[in-house]
Length: 236
Image 1 (cartoon, rainbow, N blue to C red):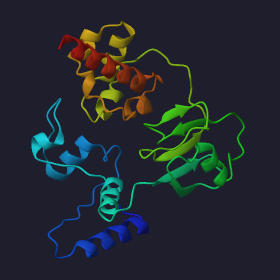
Image 2 (image 1 turned 60 degrees about the horizontal axis):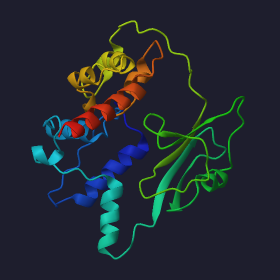
Image 3 (image 1 turned 180 degrees about the vertical axis):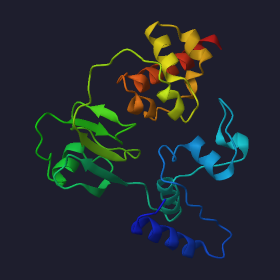
C-alpha cells in the first residue's frame, strides 16, 4: 500500500542512519495490531512465540522506540522524566505533547484547548481508542507508561444476541474464538475459558470492533484471561 510522505521520509532517514552498521530497517504494512509483540515477531522473523512463553523463547528481544530512546538517554545520565503524549479525538487542538511525568491529564487537555464542541458527553480514554482505559476523572497524573489521551463519543451500550457469524474469530490475532469465550464468561465457566486458551488474549479489541451484534467481547475476553491466570496460580 502507498505510504504517506511522512512515513516514507522516516523510513529513508532510518535507513540512512544505519547504513553500513549491519542494522536492517524492515517496513511493515500499517495493519492493526501489527505493533503487538507476538504479531511483530511473527511478521519480521516468521517465528511464533509459544503459548505461555516469552519472545526470548524463540530467540528474540523486542524493544520499542520509546524504550530504546530512554535507554540511550539513561546511558548519558538523563533520567526518564518526560513522556510524549498524543492528545486526540474531539479536542480543540489535537497535538503530540512532550510533558513531564506527573502532569495531570486535565492540564494536558487544557493545553490543547479543551473539548471540541460535542452534542453529547464525551468518553475520555487514557491510551488509544482500542486498548485504552476509560477515565471518570482527569485529575490523574501521567506516568512513564502513559501514551495518549483520546476523547470520543460514547459507544453503543446495548448488545444483541450473538449470530455466530465468526467475524470475531477471523480477526483475532491470537487465533482465539471470542464468541465462545464470551458465552463461557457469562456462564461463569472458567474451565471452559481455559480450554479456549483465553489467557492468550492480547486485549486488542478487534473482536468487539467487528461484532455486528455489538457484544462486549473484548471486555469479557479480558475477564476470562484474568480468571484463567488466577485459577492457574491458585492450582500451583
